Image (cartoon, rainbow over all chains, first blue to last red; front, side, top):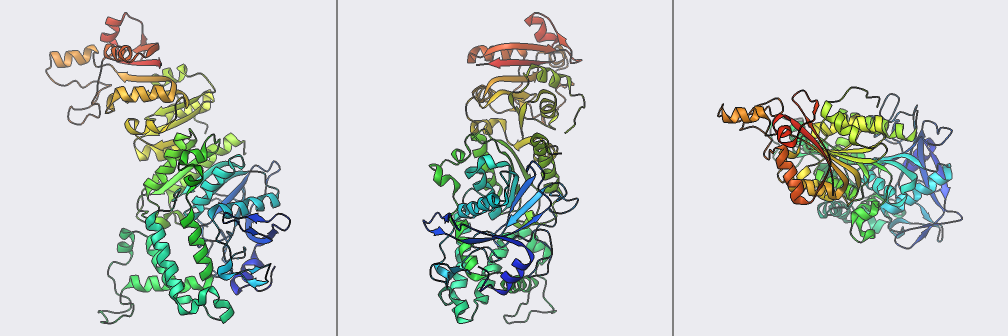
Length: 386
Length: 202
């Protein structure tokens, strides 16, 4: 299963662990396709304790991956949640056994459109089945089975990671002692689907995309993927933060250029975000994962009543939103809390004041850290964690 | 989670009314001191609702289960009989629709525990009758123009509302200005009580 890897996948798999699952029992996807065998690339920090009660699963966001708290093998940048995970941090490997797996459909070592269809031995590309958030969670559950972890002390994640957290709590309530959905929603909004569609159209409009078969043609839709990233990146920030950071400042010049170079710092910043993104992310994977988010509507399988997704749950929830997040604004997060209340679930909800927009969950937000350490401390004492 | 600090006397009275091991919702839980007491000393599965976001964040950081919410609007989310007790301490007089809040409390909880300042306390009466000014007392420390208390009542008013709603009063404790329980006939209790704690049942 390790043939035909991209350079990024090769570097990733050399630096993390992976499991080949579904050999005997394939993964039954929401679209009806049975997928197997499939590979799940994952990373762990810390040690599972004797009674297996200290496992925490981190669910990553759209373009995140399993390299949570270490130098990234492809970008050489620090891990995407080093502010949260590490010695002395909220999620301390000295206390918890922390697992993070690259999602199904991803491009950092887990099976996705980059892989080969075992039936035809051809690259999946756009023939890869469309996966859902629930499929991603099923693959994670299979990984936990493989690792011998019966249940999780906590499952935590922001954005698409938060969607997975909700799916975990709804699908495997007995395996989830506590759940922390951050800056997310129980369903993807029309506006968010709209932004994803712009990103996908940018990729598919790139002539180098070639109907998804760019690797067969030795091309790469880098411009399309970069534009998709630029658009998305705007939605991760806030109007106030963009203004504070860039204003109308010019980039390496004293006057307007009267042309279409990156006159403004904000343009240069976005171009940089786009061009560095294509080095680590696959265009088809971007199509699949954005689609999974679009399809997410947790209430749908419960007659449209979100509370029913959580009925009878014993899981302790802590929901967190940020005041300036307009991608997953507070009311979306509050809707989850209302549903949990309707299920009489044990839930805490904190809205954190910040101008950093959706990305705040990835940044140094002391109030988020205080909230989470308090929540985990409380849950830990009920769980009997030393 | 080793909070052992003594809590306010009226909160202690409320805590004493709660049987150990049950499930309680503290509406308007403030800094969470009653919640922490119920969790730590009574093994109660206690949750809180608080209007101020800063208060909520501090409670959650202290390991308590608290959400930001409004007694007037957010009790409606909970299913019937979700709690053994729904507690509302020193908040009823600040709600927009106290009668509806009480009704919701007794729908969501098997019992409701309510504490409130008595507007018929002699100090209040004197202030208005002889001073000719809106009362300012230790339990009502606001000016008329900045008070959050928009639906003040006396102990007798509250009893009348319970009668009117067909709500059973299981216990009623009247406290004097030193927060000590006083035992007097209702007419005098309504004069000398500065605040009251009621335990109600449908």
